[in-house]
Image (cartoon, rainbow over all chains, first blue to last red; front, side, top):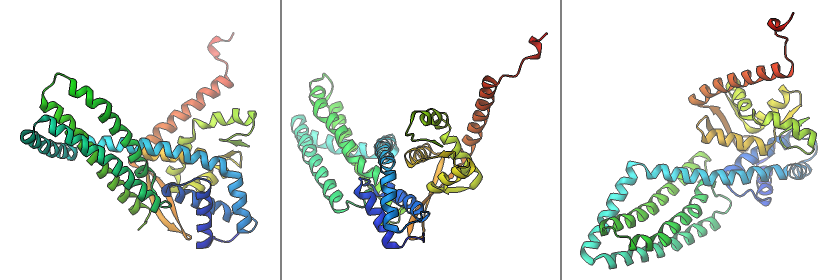
Amino acid sequence: MDQLTHEQIIAVDKALWDIGIKFLDIRIEMTDHAATAIESMEEGFEMNLKKYIFENKKELKKNYSQFRVNASIKAVKLLFSNIISLRFLDILISVYAVVFAEYKYEGFEETSSRVFILLIILLPLTGMYVSCINFIKSTKLFSTAERLFPTISGVIYLMFVPLKRIIEEMEISDSLKLFYYAFIISFFIATGITYRFLTKFYKSRYQVI
Amino acid sequence: MYTFVTPNKQQMKNSQLYKGSLNTIIMKLLEENGRMYGYEITQKVKLITAGELNITEGALYPALHKLEADGFLDVEVEKVDNRLRKYYKLTESGTKETVNRLAELEEFIRNMQNLVNPTPNPDLQF
């Protein structure tokens, strides 16, 4: 059949969305694959699309689930490579300086509870923000960026909630305990920067405004 | 027909032989053709093997994404025929890796050939 029109391409994209292929970066590739396959078929567009989806649904979903796993791995790898960068060291030193100044002024107990409150507020707020963005831009979500926050929020939660008590009960200096707080806050900031970087990267690659 | 996704036992047995070589097949095609998109790769493989080997989406794209993540492939996205198309091409390290993998595959084929169809050793004959 003839080359697909813009409207037909949108219909292919929607059909892929309907079977659960949510991330835009993989959907763009799958839409092109499906459209090229449909163009090489004999019947009309509607029939070809239905036939293609019916015959390849299992494969498309398998590809997508593999893609989701890889996206999470990629997100974590990227974040950890950012953590061993000089930029992260800059953030860590700056945050530590602020936390240490607070400690000098208010003492350990006050600083500790303020950091705790800050993170307790920040984590759900960020979660809500990301969920809202995901809801608004539901058809324009990028895999690695979207997988970053749910994955990392879990890591931060594990680092903070169970470890906090253990670290506070340890016989170590206040400076080291403050370093631990500074590290978690810096980790959180690094996640935000990585998220922004990824979103920009994908937008530029896939020409999405 | 051999497929990577296999509806029956006989085909599954055959596809296992190809699975380990999928990355090398992709890299070899990219080495020969410069840059290619997913569908083009599947069609090229089908053409070369006279329809014997059919690479499915579920096998091809995870392999392409893995090669990209490993730094062996580079990606270019272009607008073609009302849609965006993702092209893959070998990076510098990908080109080197292709040479290594092809050599490894050739060695494997030679060994398999010797095992399956051994030529008699003249030193051991009367």
